[in-house]
Image (cartoon, rainbow, N blue to C red):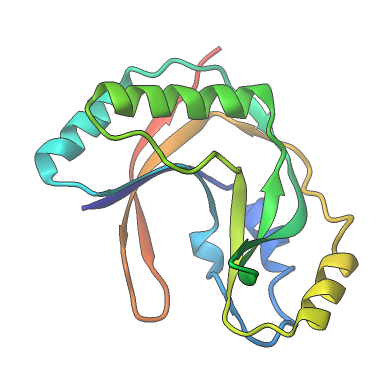
Length: 178
């Protein structure tokens, strides 16, 4: 199983995000159903290790918190735009939950995440987006904000890579409690 831990987003937030998708030639837009905020990518995991992941995540205790999604941004690699995303404000509640998940998975024997946590929701993957169009898009949507949403659980997802898009399945929800 290919696993990751994420925040699933409410339908109204997905509606708002899908309103941003379009108008950029060369952008491969993420399907609305796949919008999520990854807290920790785990990767290919044999079934017995998936049970260990579930046990580790089940033991996490954290309080609900507000999630705020802000203006679009990009990730680049070697000067090439890789993806377009909406940034999530790095609140203490979000940082605390992500840290708890990372610690729990390391204690369960998983290697540490190599990349620094950059909370975001991917909107699209760039193939050959003309830079002037991308700059215009970012400027046009620079004031985008979603109303804050209360996060009351996090989810373990499995994913199957597809030709057009990956298919994500929520496997287990873990509640947050005050």
